[in-house]
Length: 427
Ligand SMILES: Cc1cc2nc3c(=O)[nH]c(=O)nc-3n(C[C@H](O)[C@H](O)[C@H](O)COP(=O)(O)OP(=O)(O)OC[C@H]3O[C@@H](n4cnc5c(N)ncnc54)[C@H](O)[C@@H]3O)c2cc1C
Image (cartoon, rainbow, N blue to C red; front, top):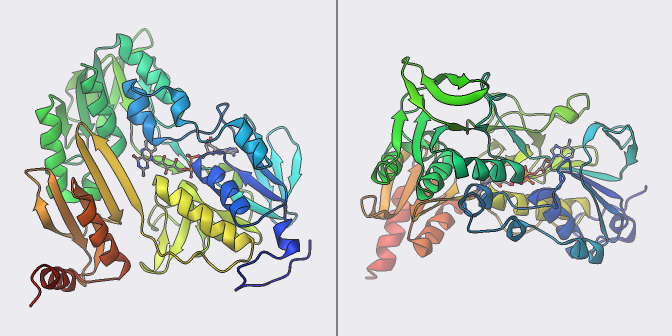
């Protein structure tokens, strides 16, 4: 198809608007891309292929409200079939893409059927990482899909002691929900503190104290060497120091890997192991990965012009932002104007953590508002040149937004504190 290049236009040219767009992955990013295309004036065919059998749904409630039983799964559904019909978007569920031929502009489905495209959006997300042992046992779970969440929920109706392997945000959230359901919970991680590599030592200590306060047994600084079983059913978890923690169920929450197997035989580039969020689809700052191929959401490592490197983040809001920006690029519209930074949240008991940018344990850390003891605070994370690269906070949402802007402005902490002080105490 011939395309009229009109890079700075606010209006979609006719040829471009009629492109046939194929979206692989029916998660939040894929659905948001279809929305964004239509909102920006795209009139051509949009096909979405998703390997799951469920109507597209949101994942954050899986480890929170759905696991806790306070939401029915329907509440997490992203769109109804009527909404897809109105938007004239064709959704194919239980269909897996097996490969893509970038040169021929063709996706091959697992059935062998070939689907031609003018523009391809890769939105295949990530899959749960597994341990090299134990996953065949009854009572051993991961948490990525609606089926996973429902399976763990029914497991907790009968099991009394849950071992959570991995104290990242997912493991920590599930530990909190399981405690609220009255279960004995052991939270295990080779790091010394929960979520330590993201939130650092100070916030990690606060989270550890919170879990201890709620009665979670913390086994930090320990890896897991095996999952014990009797007749094919998990009975405990053996730590690297030889002790065994009794458990009749286990959640393995040891991270995720980009769902890129289907791209391996293609010319779509992947990021190197040393990149932030390695192994994703390597994209430019508009999500373009190869000729007429874009990638968005958890699977995509976009070039970040502020941080000057490829960044892949597994955050819900990034899926929406990528989708909007990529839709504009496909339609050759002027880029979406708003500069953004990654955002995530995590709910544990009554603590509602919010984070902007890319905080990490490697950064310098300073509480800039409130205090950690009261669990009402904003903390700034800075790089070696004192630039603020991330913030984490709780209970101070207005202040968090001010600090978010400082990240966007590339501000140093020193300068940000000076601006804040002069705003609070005008001369
Ligand atoms: C339990 C849980 C809790 C979370 N909580 C939070 C939170 O509190 N805050 C936050 O910011 N983020 C949270 N996240 C992360 C957030 O859900 C993700 O960032 C978001 O789902 C990313 O959307 P996505 O569409 O890129 O990927 P996904 O949601 O993974 O969707 C990708 C879809 O593509 C499908 N697919 C994969 N390969 C193929 C193929 N070859 N063919 C067809 N389909 C394929 C997958 O089956 C999947 O349905 C959470 C994630 C989980 C799992």
